[in-house]
Length: 312
Image (cartoon, rainbow, N blue to C red; front, top):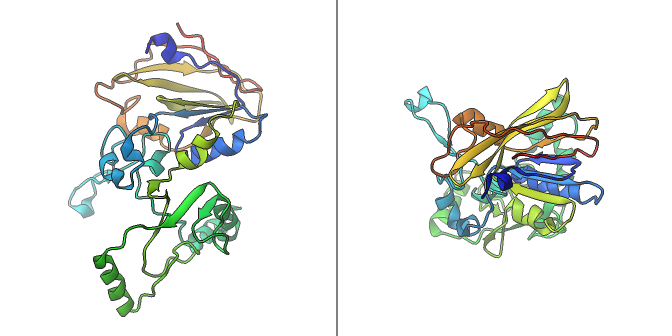
């Protein structure tokens, strides 16, 4: 890859989405559904063209592998005898949904209702449940709690082990009820989880929401682009600082301009975390070097959120 190729991102965009993780893939899908919206999706990791991103047991090879994982760690915890814990985060198109255990889990309704009570309007359980149903392509079909027409496939676990059945039986004997569905808003019980798979293949957010629409002429995906920070004038986003990663190196530039539109770059997932945690532009392959700002260019974000560069 030449320097010119590495730094040229020409085009006019209404939305710039930072991070092609679970949220970024959904955002790109929904925003580009309107052909009037020109959408640019930036991802610091690479494409999910590795077999272990798709075979369900592949998370054993992806987690803890710098090709797929940001390799974060927690601070040392006194209560854990000074140990630091690994904190896997996906570094690939699809984000954590490309490397996690594929468990389909919405959480407790009480948590959502508590957020609403704290002032987070629109995040109560009754607010989000219809959105969950809309996303679902559930093996149970169209029910009170699940949908059948969405993109994200949910299936029964294909694994049934005698030892797990024994654990379920023991829990029942202790008075813990058995449940066939943990996604009704009440997680009480014991049973097998539902999983984000389709016919034994992982159903990541990229596979569900992004790949089916990448042929849209108003949607563009760029991988290997790490956004380090957003630039603001007051409360208006006017640019961003990013570097192109790959080939064992990291190259940086500053992008700035004037924004006269209410539409601005959207932040999704762990791009800033990577910079803060590692002190580097990237944590990609061997030889990744600290950001050197060897290339600088001007990028303007105008009413059509123009993204242009003319780096040497």
